[in-house]
Length: 196
Ligand SMILES: [Zn+2]
Ligand SMILES: [Zn+2]
Image 1 (tube, rainbow, N blue to C red):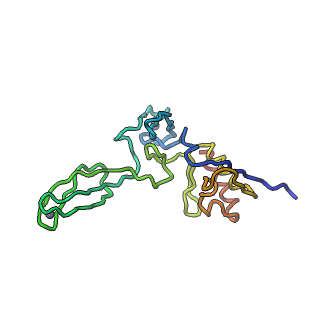
Image 2: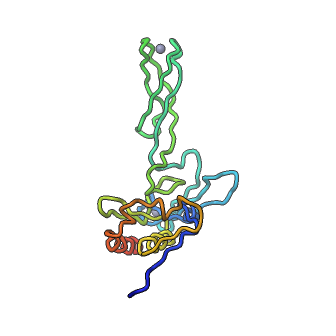
Image 3: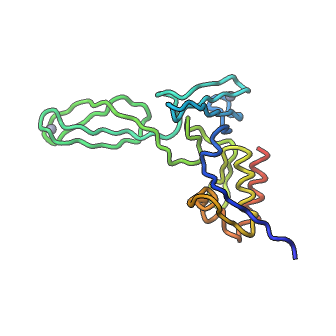
């Protein structure tokens, strides 16, 4: 009988792979790198640079390239009724035209906020991840090659053991990644993605 493969999770979370993230360059579509900067006061500080076209940027109030959601939340200046609105875009439209039930019409500035729920993008700029591919109708993705290695060792393990805190990355992975029946295909996909 062959020896069972064991995976021991000592407490790995997504952010353990955030030091260096491979993304698709927004200018030339080649591989660009997002490097996290360790400045304590600025949690979400990073730089992105592309060696292929020279594109580079650092995190600022305008550097987010991912999905956004707009909010309007203020009382009507005439009748005082609270006007609440959520907008999906177009991105960076500055004002929305509001028509209150009292008849007053006015333009109100929109507050745009990044949406972080697309996991297949980097958490600093919202750029699409380089290491990603579709399998079983789902997107399999990783921040970098260390993350891919981590996924591989979780997927190929016969025994998974947690020695650290609960709710770590290996536990919170979607069921289709962890399903024993999918193992062969997922490992093939990880192999394919790592050669991108
Ligand atoms: Zn580029
Ligand atoms: Zn009104």
